[in-house]
Length: 75
Image 1 (cartoon, rainbow, N blue to C red):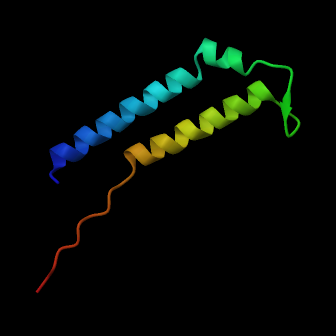
Image 2 (cartoon, rainbow, N blue to C red; image 1 turned 180 degrees about the vertical axis):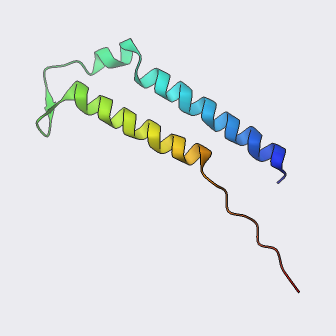
Image 3 (tube, rainbow, N blue to C red; image 1 turned 90 degrees about the vertical axis):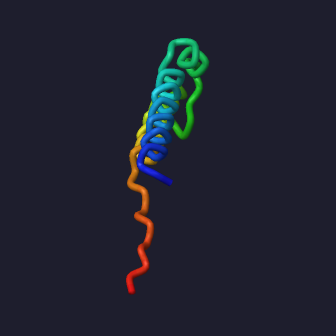
């Protein structure tokens, strides 16, 4: 795989992460989780915000992470 293909894939991943973040932190989705219930004692909205934030950071790390260099056989 050449350098251009890798950068195209990385750009597509970054766009997907931005769309995911935009969707997770958009009002209609936040309104779904704005309920008077709790998860392990944490209000549902705060739990959702933390989960979405952590998932966005993890996906961003995956999107920009290093690829392993291909091994080169040396004589």
